Image (cartoon, rainbow, N blue to C red):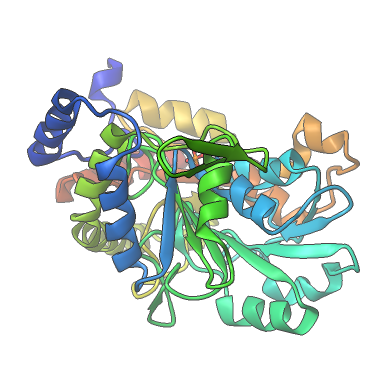
Length: 378
Ligand SMILES: *Cc1c(COP(=O)(O)O)cnc(C)c1O
């Protein structure tokens, strides 16, 4: 079996109009941030109910900019989850602050909102929820805590574009929200991200932090009053992102359909009774960024992944717990600190789910999974 025969766990879907649009941008003579970046920000702003949005060249830098805008730095604490892509905690370290982890709820796999309050200290500045796999955190509970303790909220909604919380789109309400357009996300701009700003934030500060702190006046005036980075999005990337936004609703509907198909087959296989944890059955709020199962402890995930690959099925691991990485252990975190995140992180397995999957692929994945799990005595 060659790599090309393996069904990947995800794959971006670019239509011909977008590809042709990219060629036009390439021929236009303007490649970096320009008219398409403005159009992309406009379509994003409309998507998020008219809120102010700025685009960046990654979801990671988007979060870092938000933390800088909030003045988070040395001595400050940011409360977040240990079960996320490492970027979530890395950005906290990048601004000199300290991540404070709260263990996850093993059912939702998002951090347990009822445990946040106990983690708040006089140094806490921000609550940083992650909507893992697109399943939203309890944004009412988080908002209430933020109000009560005068904290700010930065949603790491990298995986949650198009998700809703009680009928309202994630990012269309609340405080700061950050999204990613990495090729594995539900929509892509090759690389990229965007920040939804609250009314009290200065979009021009976001722009200065995005590009060297530069502020221009008139035809020849330029000043720099803040340390900005180099985080602007090219028009080539923005053109791709704009084209993808036209298709987001259709993508997410298809993902939901495929997730339902997974449950139908996995339920018939009695997977839950065999000790395999299925995701929460949320067909209203989740954008089904990923379909993830948790293998029973004692089963080698690497061996299962290899056996599935041998049968033409690609899988992924999202994510190993952040606090167990060397960098974080050096900060004092250790095994046993967050048992639910460690257990789920050790067994979690992302199955293929992307809009271009065919209905028959679900049966193929589940058939292979059934055979492999039986081999491993599950
Ligand atoms: C993808 C992702 C990011 C980072 O986004 P990039 O665009 O890759 O920088 C951050 N947090 C989470 C939860 C993600 O899934």
